[in-house]
Image 1: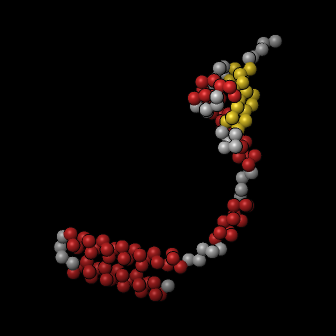
Image 2: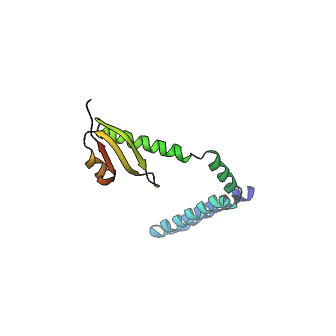
Image 3: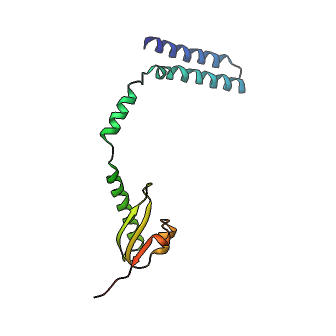
Length: 138
């Protein structure tokens, strides 16, 4: 730590002296820029000495501890799709739908107003995988 502080002070001192001795104009700006980069390099040099070998084990155990189960993720995604559809077509009853391996809507069954254009254009569910059930009034 002591050596690093000495190096930082020396870099700042050398940068200041060379900047003051440089001729006015573009030359001084260039020297100041180079001195600034040199000071930043010395300032950041301790980062290269950090031992990150134990970090991968910590990250792996952290990931296992806080992993979201797949079915929970699918439930959340399904509820988001359901809420989106109902926000666009509130008179629709969603009877069910499935997600593909990428958690995108694969097919859907619904009743109520015809939302086939919404499903095709916005959610990319082809019409052949849309099942609209007519309402029956008994």
